[in-house]
Length: 343
Image (cartoon, rainbow, N blue to C red; front, top):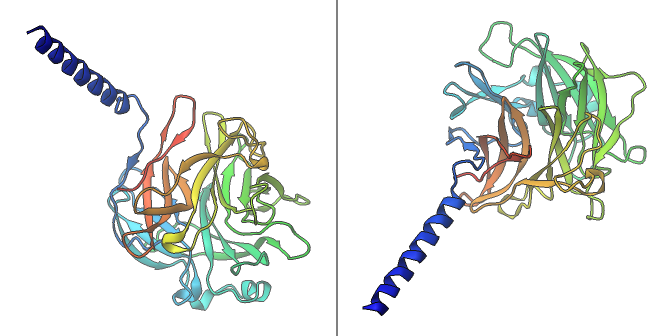
């Protein structure tokens, strides 16, 4: 009887331990991102998300298709809070293709990694012009009154080049634009891919172009890693911190992609940015945010809108084709973003 009672007590103790462990692993006070279950046309690369407020439509502008609209940024729309997406054409058609891009960067087939930013009633559409493996690149700008192709007055007016990179002259790559305003309302452009890493450049309103005489400054790098695989900077201001999200390692290899998202932060928009361990991003720092999980391979090319993180990944269950994903970021008690894998 004593032996049996001891066994029962032992079993009960194990059950309590398992229950406590389960409670610890699932405790409700852990930050949990809300992952949106997406449907529709999700074949999106390098999404620039505009999350609508109070029932307004959502939009995603993304890397263009060389066979459609002269490779202009693609547009997709959601009317149910970012869950179901439908193709909505391209930002412009072949008749308004920017000739200066073709004259500046030889071999451009499509425009990459757009960025959308609204200031004082004007929308600024930045985009990248380049070819794979080259830093002969440029970031261009168009302006309009709305990102909605169905809205009255929709259209994008070409404003020309913002910044370029020239092999042999510049140790940076002028692609992957991201815009943030500082506490004084002044705009800053973050950009870069491989080469010398991620750059920051002050802009000025209303033109959306660089401040006269300003030069790019490096804010993040993968020092010691061959080819410096870092790109797609995107900065978000929160609680007095500027958070620099970026993609690192290799994209565009389908299910073999090693892309992942990391982050650092700074009290000043121009840096220095450090990770959660205090390591400067220029020296290779970066706190992991999201990497390959199951069939979600190589997440990256991110943007953030109204607290929602948008990115693309390569679907291991669909031969590595690229897909759009969106989730509402969570934040840890010590102020770091938390993301989750796609279901």
